[in-house]
Amino acid sequence: MQHFSSVDGVLHAEHVPLTDIAEQFGTPVYVYSKDALSANYAAYADACRAHGRAIGSKGGALVCYSVKSNSNLAVLNLLHRLGSGFDIVSGGELLRVLAAGGSPDKVIFSGVGKTVEEMRLALSHNILCFNLESIPELHRLNEVAAAMGKRAPVSLRVNPNVDAKTHPYISTGLKENKFGIAFEDALATYRIAAALPHIEVCGIDCHIGSQLLDDAPLLEALDKLIELIDTLAREGISIHHLDIGGGIGIPYEGGQSVAVGDYLARLFARIDAWRASTHQGKPIQVMFEPGRSISANAGLLLTRVQYLKHGSEKNFAIVDAAMNDLARPAMYEAWHEVLPVVEHQIAAETYDVVGPVCESGDWLARARQLAIAQDDLLAIMCAGAYGMTMASNYNTRGRAAEVMVDGVHVHVIREREIPSALFALESIPEYTR
Ligand code: LLP
Image 1 (cartoon, helix red, strand yellow):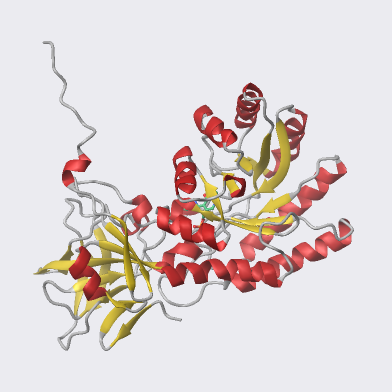
Image 2 (image 1 turned 180 degrees about the vertical axis):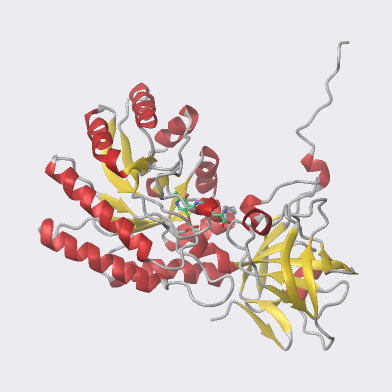
């Protein structure tokens, strides 16, 4: 099913016209489709089950949705109810998962810079696993766990040195990146981990980058991890789960990205063949950390044209959303489809769609053919991932409201921020000189 589609010339989210949402909740507003989120999660879970891997069971599979892509409590709660675990990168994200009703025993904690406080918090909730990225981090976690009388479950994030062929800012699996433990250092690091009394080695993980349109680099990374697991087994270090990270992209500009079901079929075929040949068929739990492939096309940013400005070189559609609402174009020159919400019988012109922020980098789309007039609504598509989570208050702009559409119903899942809330934590000192 198309979760955002045009009915009688008006773009809808599920069964609700976006014109109604704008009227009721104002703009800019993030609009999510519950069905789209559910279907995107199901693509992973169904493929796991189709390959004989029960979700959540040892030797089965676990989908740990990457919270950073869209961390609204309603999104997390929906995914939790569907059976998802969570991949977090901060203590704040753990608290969000808990507030959304998520289970800490399905939480994995990634990231290169975990603080002592974050480690304590995660240990106190008995999370499933810490994905560690360096030897000092290993020692720190061992000490924190010792002080709490616990053993910390650990996976090492290995950097397989595979080129993910994506934007340099979101490529993470190359030697030059800050992420992970170099492949050639992994064995020695596992030996250190295995010898630490308050560390329990349980897994191996990687994440080579984001917005991968092809699964070949992921399968290449899998082969490297398999090689390492076999080496570790010969040393008596057994690995109970293999976490291949996130990364499957979406076709922002049309075309195709690899289908989740096809990718998982290829991945499981390799894993099954390997386990059958070298591990007497003994299963290993397989984990995924998808973010974008679950949340991106499940959300759009709805904005209203404030002015049309016709310049000598360019035409601008100045809208009420800006780089503070959706940073991806300014940060990565990312391309998002822009659709007029109501179709007009007027001549299309070429516009740059820009926000009101005082920076030339404040653009949402460039050189688009749009048949639009002042006060029209535009939908910036595929904004459900890394949209609201990367929003800021630059220019003292309150962050947009968020709504979840469920069939014919619309639920506010985050109120629009009011300006006074933006400076409520600030104070003016009583100077003494
Ligand atoms: N696991 C780890 C350890 C990650 O660092 C990430 C994303 C994911 C999983 C989820 O990756 P995904 O399935 O969403 O590709 N802000 C950028 C994307 C940054 C991705 C950071 N890491 C963007 O807007 O394109």
